Image (cartoon, rainbow, N blue to C red; front, side, top):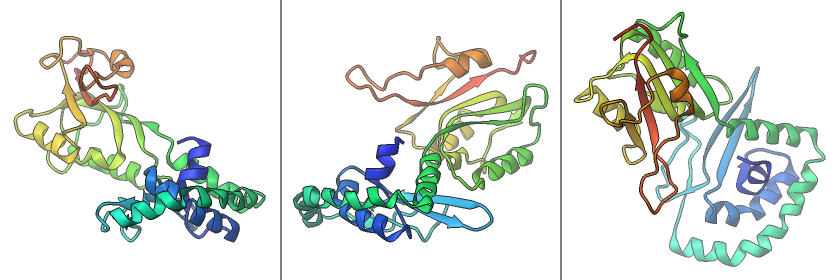
Length: 249
C-alpha cells in the first residue's frame, strides 16, 4: 500500500486526537474504497493488526486479532457516505497536522510496513524440511511475527518426500505465489484440500501436468508470471508451483 493509501484509506485506532478527527472525516473514503482499520499494540514489540473497515457481514474479523471487526454495510449508509464524501474529505487536513507528532509518524510507518508484502522462505536447498511437524512449526513462527505482513512469494524447500497434507494451512501467511520444491502433494485429496484452505476462485496449481510452460527450476519459478484468468481481464491467478528437488526424480 502506498503512503497516500495509508493516509486516506486507513484508520489507525487510538491515534493522536487530530488524526482521529481526520480519520472520522475520511470514513466515507474508507467505506466507498474498501479501506482498512489498523490497530497497533505497543508492548515490548509493536504488533500490528488490520481488518476491512466495512464489510457486508458485520462479524468479519481480523485474522490475527479476533475482537477487531468490521462495521456492516447498508444501502442507506452508502447513500449517506456518498453525500458526506466531499465535506468529510476536508477534515483530512486535521490528519495532516497530526503528522507533526512523532507518534503519528511512527504509527504510519508501522501501518505501511504491515501492508507491504515480503518474500518468505522455509528451509533451504542445502537444509530442506523433512518432517511435516517441522513445517507446521515454521509456518506458525512466520504467522506470529508482530508486523503480520502479507507474503509475496512463499517458498518451501522439502527433502523430496515432505508431504503437504491436512493441517498445513498456508493461507495464514496470505501468499500471492507458493513455490513447492521437493514437496509431495496428492492432487486428488490433499491438493483439493489445500486449494480449499485458500480461495479456489483465486488459486491455480501449476506443474508440468497442468501447464506445458510450467517452471522446472527454482529460478524459473521465482520469475514465473501467473496467467491471466481470461482474455478480457487483467486479473491474474495466484499460483502454487510444484518443482522437483534437484537430483530427485
